[in-house]
Image (cartoon, rainbow, N blue to C red):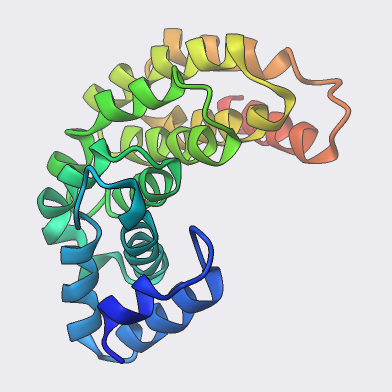
Length: 215
């Protein structure tokens, strides 16, 4: 069974198990799967019935980019059409891909900041928003210019964030500390201090990590 058939027959919108299995084959040297996944992530873009194929391909790319971003970094431009699909699943995994590849291809990675910003206005769930927050942190860490661009987006996101989104925004703030000036550091510090007494230990740890790095 070829990749298209595997994705087409996949039950559910996203199968992590299948995506991880196929990604592992790519990491072990099967570049055919990788090339096909790059193609299928944009398959039949306007057809909701094809979302399993797109999301399954996106899962493969996400897991490969997490481990070996160099295998995908030069192909980010080919993935952009899929950022317009309706289903959040494909888009959140591609946001992760662009974030993982940001250091290796900052130009193409930063070119989709506006997509990420628009996704945050959708209220489509923490998986999508969290992926965008992490992407913004990773891409913002590539240069002072990009950090200055993502900082106000993250600041605005924090003002509207649910409890489950705060950690990812704080993580993104932490990522860009070294790329912002004193005013940016002060803004990040103020935002972090708002959560110094948070209920979640994970949040408190991130706050302390931020304050320690700024001090």
